[in-house]
Length: 94
Image (cartoon, rainbow, N blue to C red):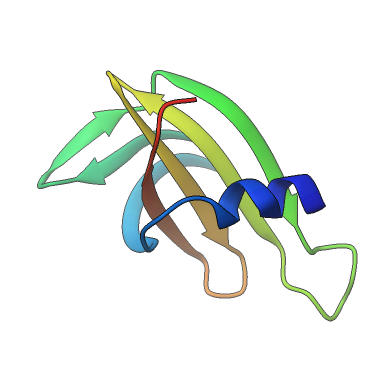
């Protein structure tokens, strides 16, 4: 988990709320299939990485992360289970 936090700590910018198209499941949101940015939907071409924080410890809320590629651009998506919200951050290339 320390490695993941180190990666996120090097990314400049702020996460912003976004709309994500995903398959809902009984355990939470499914994999992202589309993301609404700049007034239009973008298809998720590839999920490059995924990880989570919290969840096992009742003091920490579950946060899901997905590093995705849409066309030639890369994004970090995170799902905040407590708020049931998706957020996006434009990410540097892998």
